[in-house]
Image 1 (tube, rainbow, N blue to C red):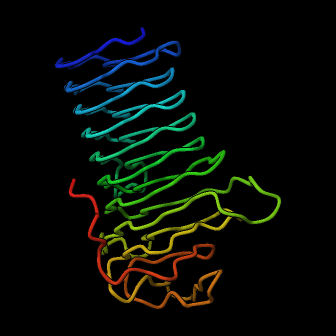
Image 2 (tube, rainbow, N blue to C red):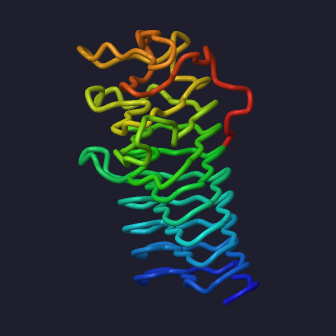
Image 3 (spheres, helix red, strand yellow):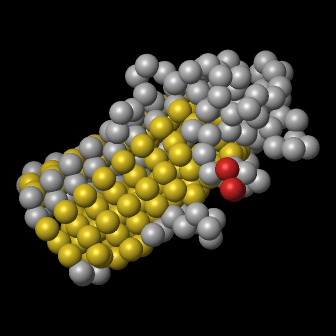
Amino acid sequence: MNRSEISDNVVQRTRYGISLGSGSSGNVISNNTVEDVDRAISVSGSNNTLVGNSALGDDRGIVVRGSNHTVANNDASALWWAVSVYGVNHTFRNNEFSGGEIQDGEGGSIQLRGSGHVIENNSLTGYYGVYVESAAGPISLQHNRLSAVRQVEVEETKLCPDPGVVITAHENVFELAFEPYSEWRYGIINHDDDMVNATNNYWGASDGPSSHDGENVTDPVTGEPANGSGMPVSEGVHFDPHLEQPPANETDS
């Protein structure tokens, strides 16, 4: 299917909702309601647009593969992942995503693989806010509001022979949330050798991010300690300087 529009439908109680295959290009999926399904909306191919949809899936809300898709102004939730992302150069803007099982410590808003993705001005809630499972290249997170237990987690990828920067995160709001799960909480936890560049974020407190007991995290560039009262960070996160209040252009989603 190419250069077509799928809009204003209600899809319920089936295994798969709306799906575009690998040969699809230039299509618009808009203003649909898909609920009580396994995977609500799945898109492959290239240069497709998802806008204004409500996607409620048992397993996944939205699955994106291929290249250069735009996902904007959608509301997606799921018992596992609200959104699973594969491929390259996808843009996610002004969405509300929530997913996962908080008590079980699994699932969440966005599961990311691939490279070239831009995640901006979204509201992200769940156990994970953004889980970077496998980064094949740069990924940008900016102007998002995250309210999750593990707000951003970056797994080991070994992309560079020497530590570099693959994940950038700027002007996000990391809400100080989920107090009953404080021993699990992180604003950003980085397992990779590549540094996460996360300067100029608001960590939920004016004095910046904290360290978990016994970790004594310091900024890998400036040497500043993570000794504030905001969301904790791990080693390998360049957090200094931080914002003392939420940025004026944070998402209103």
